[in-house]
Length: 114
Image (cartoon, rainbow, N blue to C red; front, side, top):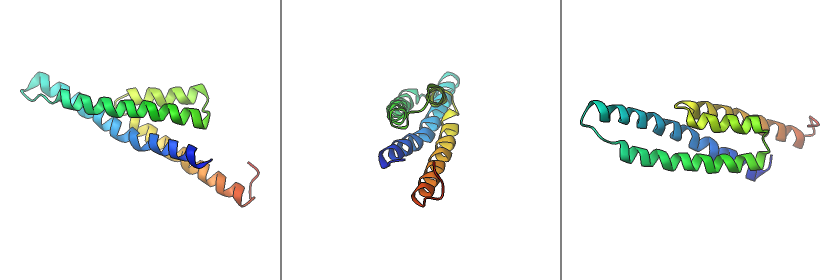
């Protein structure tokens, strides 16, 4: 894995958890708006919107660089629109990155022909 691909995956991983947290907070704010006088939907919506746009941009970059199959790319996109999906995406991306680093080091040491 080259450095640009690793960076693209890292960016996607780093934005996935905050995007999921902002989605959950937006849902809480929506409920509070309808049940109390607390109204933080607009600022929370803007924060979530920015994080979601960043996620989609980083997702497209990662898909382009890693050459994921359509099924894998679709999975990461669907995880972005589920309330807790970002947490699962972050975990899966971390594993994928760690596996790629291990394989790269093994190739450098010529221990494995991969």
